[in-house]
Image 1: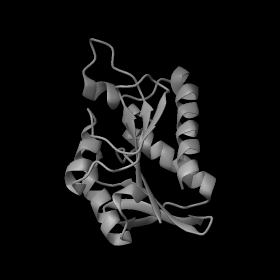
Image 2: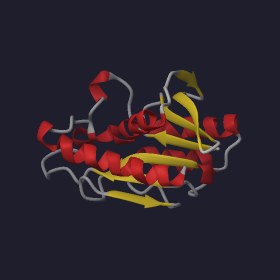
Image 3: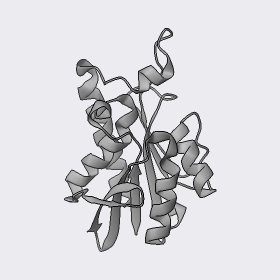
Image 4: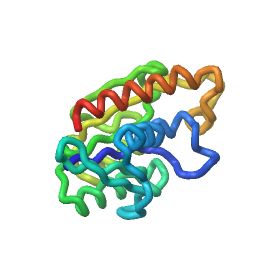
Amino acid sequence: MKIVVGLGNFGDKYAYTFHNMGFLAVDCLADRLGIKLKTKECSSLTGVGSRGGEKIVLAKPLTYMNLSGRAVKELMARYRANSEDVTVIFDDIDIPRGTVRVRNSGSGGTHNGMRNVVAECGTENFPRVRIGIGRPPENVPLVDYVLADVPRDERPAIADAIEHACDEIMKRI
């Protein structure tokens, strides 16, 4: 059993913002695996499939970013999963835009959604895939930056990073 949770915010106004890299990566995985995200459960929109005989759950929390931990905790309880079986995907301002980094555990760092996952679940032992969005320009508040649409001229590079993140996850599920 593997659960992959992409962090983001629901709604059309957030669809292609920097803060929605996790949702975009889960959509990419759903396409690759032929999984439809259509069930509302565990404070998430989920889809279930399999790969190589192993059950795969894809999830996009409906809680908004900073409360994502509730959804992850509910998914773990519902599917009787350990934290090591849950991969969390999210944007990261602390790594260069378009960069993908994978870690097996660690703190939530500067990401409030991941901090909430760690706090709610009581462990840092979550594999995570971070998609770099870089830091905002000096005169742009962080909240405005992460909730801004990815500029059209940067979308190909971001799409490549999302594909790379999906490649990394496919190696692990």
